[in-house]
Length: 423
Image (cartoon, rainbow, N blue to C red; front, side, top):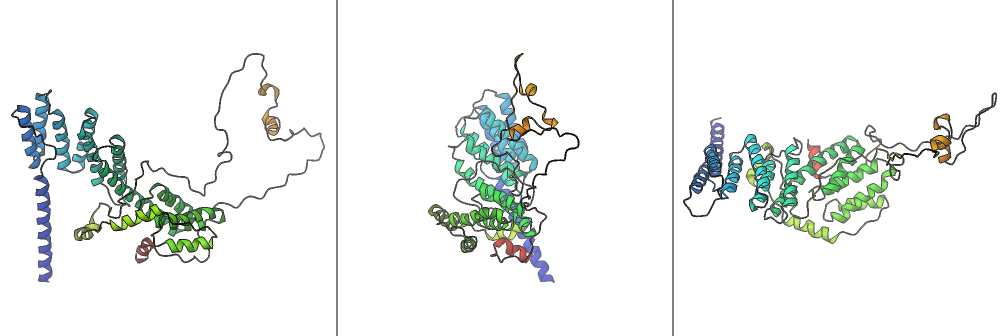
């Protein structure tokens, strides 16, 4: 009993010491944007004093000094540096309120000084603000979406900046979290038997986030979902298995995908050499989690991005919800005319409204447009015409309420299904 209490107390003391070291190290970190000009100008003296306060964690005092500089010396050459230092002080202070203030200050800096090199740095820090507040894939995605938008904005507005490679990798990590979130929803629907809903989510992962680390598993579940939706979706199922063989040739699901293609009588494609080189590079540059990361992973709210891709161009468009494949396409939607135009007529000209009978009367323009003869009025006492043959309706599309019947075929177990079986 005493030994267990002693170990617990010692472990708590070690954690407190590590936390204190981390906080003190953050506070005494050197400021990254100092003014190197050696001068004794009053505005430069005020700036240097504020920077020392920032490094020592006296953020409120530093902001008061910087505001004094900006209000007193409104023509100073250090105005831009002072405004950026105010934003950096909020960034270092941390917390949701401070991060919101820092983002507003960085946005103002980019608005007032768009041509300075520090503007790209300010945009990168806005991305970092939301990246630090991201939560796991099964939680609130608001900061994940904002982080993706801000990193994409940096690559669009400052493509030649020295922060562009950093933002590119950050965007891959963010899209890894988004892909994991969509995959989990699709996997849930697949195991529940709601195959149209599963196909809709997994198709989004496959098309929009090809760099996602479990894209091969998403394609496997997507192909299986299409195969369970009936023979009408056979070609879609074949396409997903072909993508596994062609675009993810080093995946452990390749042999199973080839077996499915043989069963479906589909063509087995050749592996893409570019995909082979990309997957080899990813395997050689996989980042392993440290001991502290493995220990604190289950208790941390931050997502695990260690499996994110290290190469490849991330998606530069926002994800949009798609229509499930089981929703029928309206008639005429593919090639119909959807534009409506209005025109005026001059007096004396006859129009279709004047010459053709009213469509509501049972004939006229609608019947003539379909190549039929308008219906003629029947005399009193006449027998009605023979009824037209009724066309049998097509096979209904699958719905999410239809659970699969019969025995399920054996499927290779992926890392996701193994975890769920253990649960």
